[in-house]
Image (tube, rainbow over all chains, first blue to last red; front, side, top):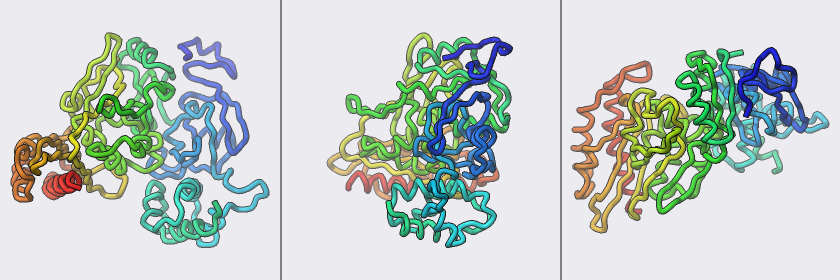
Length: 174
Length: 289
């Protein structure tokens, strides 16, 4: 545990009560950065790692646009501090597709079924879907709607999103 | 940066955390799952000088059965308790209530102790713990004390926790073999806070009479409202629909729910009038099953 130190003495990599150096693995790549203890995980991912696929919507845990996987579980990245991700393994929307830039079956299904319009909520919905379908096969539309109830979309009316998840369930070999 | 400036500490033991709280007093705030506190920090509604993050206090993350009592560490995530195989019988009220808490993203981070210490009057977990007769263990520098839900929940976002105390454990007592429970909620959307939620647990004797019960209602007061008179009226009796109906009417007549943009007092009273009998009937049905 670090205790209060003279802030003028803080240098990159040193820990204080206002700055910390953290190590995270994001989409298979390891990063070491010094961050403010006030910085949210989603701001860290976007601003420090330049992974801007994770979107910042409401910033208080309601909309789900910032959803990322932390140690394989979907969480609100606006409600986690970057310092809390120290030592964790993250996956953002940039990590879903394969190395060869081919879309993941979940992404392909959203593409083919018009599961997005403006696309702002889509990264969060893709990650929620990715996690949901890993645990669930052949979900009912009710189960899909419940799984996605924490992700708000203001364009689509959800019909095509549900259809996309159903298609992804069929296409994704897992 | 969304939150106002604070100094950040991340102790790894309860002892260290208590030491920090003692040092800082009520300027400090404990951070557990962060699903309520971080929004308040982001809005700057909460501006603690020190943030004591207890997510690395892993000694508080456990669910176990101990001498017939369900013992839950305060840092246990909602999702862990929701999926715990130990939560059966009347204890199944806990996973059933948790299913209504936010969404899977929220439950992956939110903690049992955090929900209780936050004491939102419309939250599910305080009502469920209260109905089951749960007790809270509060630890400070001078030791531990164990309090009932009635003592713990003092009102709107207010608990018996002193600024230098930590809620470390929740103890849910054993229930008789023929027990059942039910959690019913009405909210605007699934995952929202309850407009009204009812947590009920009933234990039956061999002759089908009620031998024990618990009933708590969220969303109708500053804290989970315990319907002790309803349970007292049921104990020793056959839980008929007529008796449950009469006792519910008496209980509802005494309620003084808040009116706000989520529902008027009359509407909430009406919800309680419908949900209480349904939750009790379902508890009885499950006790018999």
